[in-house]
Amino acid sequence: DHRDLHSFPTRRSSDLRSPLDIATQFPQQDGLLYLNHAAVAPWPLRTQAAVSEFARQNVHIGARDYPLWLKVEQQLRERLAWLVGGVHIDEIGLLKNTSEGLSVIAQGLEWHTGDQIIISDQEFPSNRIPWQALANQGVDVIEVNLEGDNPEQNVIDAMGPRTRLVSLSAVQYGSGLLMDMAPIGAACRAQGTLFCVDAIQILGALPFSAERVQADFVVADGHKWMLGPEGLALFYCRQAVQDQLTLRQHGWHMVTDPGNYTRKDWQPAITAKRFECGSPNMLGAHALNASLSLLQDTGMDVVANALQQRVQRLIDGLHSKGATLLSPTARERRAGIVTFRLPHEAPNETFQRLKNGGVVCAERGGGVRLSPHFYTTNSVIDQALDLL
Image: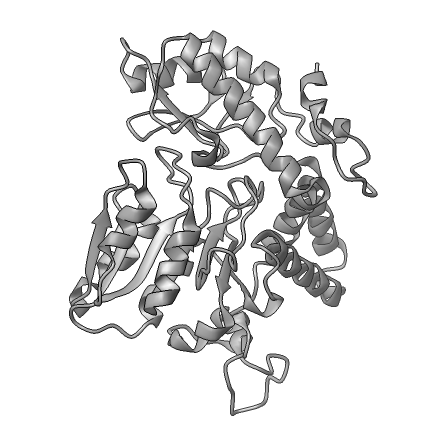
């Protein structure tokens, strides 16, 4: 029964004509209760179709129609530019994953002994290790505690004259805390400090604008809320700061004239393609482009509202079970993550019990993390809660 999914409208398109089409895009296995989009998300059917067609072409005609594949890649860049708030397509690069994007920044900037980088004390290792690896250059990493009513001010108060860069997750992977990035970005811009956003837990879940939060860099892999494959990530680099990153990887693809193979002199591309040193992940581009088309056809405001309905249903249900919520419950402080623990059961035992009942979730942040998406049915949520 998908009627509970149909309480929100969808935009019309050639292949998304009604809310029912969204439900049919995710024909998941009977008994599967998928609440793990903060880790790795299932693909929609249109993504399977795109990958199958790409494979069919490779089998039967090889790369004969490669120019058409490049059009798909271009469309993906346009959709990513839309998803990150309508930035210019020349500011969009395609890298392998979030860690690579953050490493491009960490290894590309010129550091001096005593420089400081500010992160939070809740960051996933992807947004910690690349900065800690700069210790041999005399760079200090400051981990700011996010407890309290105003975690943004905690970050701003930690900034000083030696702060070169602030790098924060828009949504913390364990607690699910949604940060208000705008005041932090404004403080960075006023001080001349670079601002990097790890957006992997917000893009595809909530509307986001790189320009509104004044981010210099936004990095996010496509395999979570964007409903795409692993191995392909957004790398947004604001045009004005691209020259601040020294290129550490070079190849045929990152130059101004990549189709001229006999040319001996070269210059880096004047766009974010300069960070893409070699042949593209064309399979991943077809997959992620199809996944993002579902989000674009639906509209991010619709996606966000539907997701918040599901998150609220989880919060209400967990409260009724006597669970302790480790995630914020206020709407302005949450995205798609709900982490909890039961009063008389260790989180690993709760996790195993849910897993045995068909729930796909994760043990994170000192509890069990549930993460539905906008298409998740009420019945999936209710069945998971019944197991508690």
